[in-house]
Image (cartoon, rainbow, N blue to C red; front, side, top):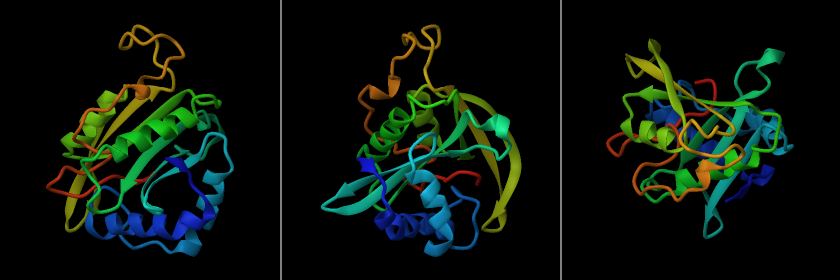
Length: 203
């Protein structure tokens, strides 16, 4: 796992567009262009709250994870939204969990209080992953997105950037994502094996 660079943008966009075309994990319905994602990349490559991490195999980017703005208004600045996407065929190998762990660890020292994630449901693999990383289910918005000719629900999860001891016996400042991941499901918003995978911010 390593921080992303501008040179990764072509592959990052290609992976994302796979889910735009084939998955309900993102509510984008038209593929995005690399040139349109340059401002997004700059925001995520400058350090601070918003980060982009990539996973490589034989020098090929095979997945990425981000923390991104949750809402544009200033008071939301201490909340970030997390996302993970893997290249097709890379599920079930722990890559998504490792990416998620890396990006959460990267922002642990920033001025961040809360991490949130939206999961298009049903998606039991993603729910398991979020619970493993200390997220709690907040609630579900029903039929809030229409894609592929049907309506989809989105379930939202949240966690403090540092879990207090009473929330899972984790000491203040500890990093629960450093625990070894269970085998099986992939990163946040990852799709069960019968479907596809994750979601970037904002749906």
